[in-house]
Length: 458
Image 1: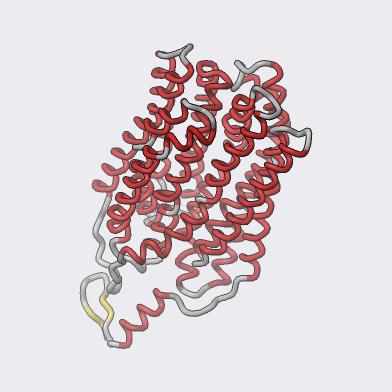
Image 2 (image 1 turned 90 degrees about the horizontal axis):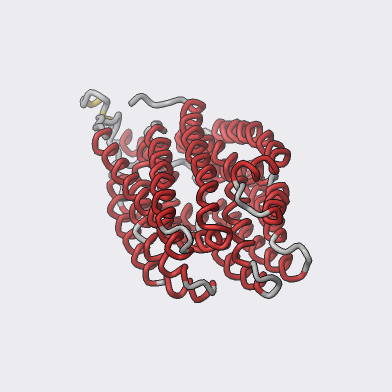
């Protein structure tokens, strides 16, 4: 398929991400009606461990593989990634199954153990999906990413409502059924992704001999991204333990309160953030070749364009979230009690600013990776996540804010990450020639370069 331009590629992924998130948000309407506040709390308490393992086995893959492939400096990157992250994904599945009881005991919720076991196979499936997404993004084709995102969400919604309804009134079984729908959706999406990969892969003779990338080459790009991405779910896992335990000393509705914060408020805030994800994903195959060729000024200019586009899209979304929070609560979470709905509106309005900051963090992190400096993004994520956990614990425990303290801490954390990322993009300088340039020089020193027609030229 023909390579897409930056804005077209960004639009494709943004539409896919938005539709996916919109389906997820709409899904919450019947889900919270079936599960109730407590059931939604249990549902959300399963996800921090899942997200950590998912991050290790999948999160660094799309951007890392996309950068390797788009740079033209790595042949077979996706094949090595399939083997490497297939093994890592399988290990993640086994680890999640084994730690289900430990997490359940730590959170003080017995139902979490069963849900973790049911959800565990998804870790492997998502790893495979991520490799396919990274491969096509590196080729400048954003359709597979958009398609798999929509497919997995649509399947989850259909099966989630059906299965959870079968056990309505039995909280543990109903939540477990909803979680099982996630596993079904990821398995189906993985099958679609692999079918697209094998049917869409084409062999094109390169302009020059492209070195075959090994496992170390894949890890060199994906591990820093994994280390960066793991910071957020790890902080959410710690937050789910610490905040819920502190809230239990204050109120008997601790699980339900956490469910409203994590399962409802964050869902609404992440909806506009998903729109700007396409800008982050599409920037990688555009910025990476410029950085690889040593054209840092042009690469930074492209980073600025991506960030400005993100700001122009996310700012109206933040205003809309603040103004329309009561309407969104009535439409999407109509089954909440008046007190719970009032709390949700307050949380969404507190976190509305995150529609801007989180979107910019997302795009700026992708830009830093494209510039070949992923460790900087890793540092900013870990610093901000530490701020989030410490501030959440302090505000919930030491102030009358309650769960609203967790929302304020999230605001502060994303501001810290954004400040670090933006400062680095502004001050970064070229440190040396890139691998791709060196490869061309080495080929040129032998007086031979292979052209697209298989001939050689002096």
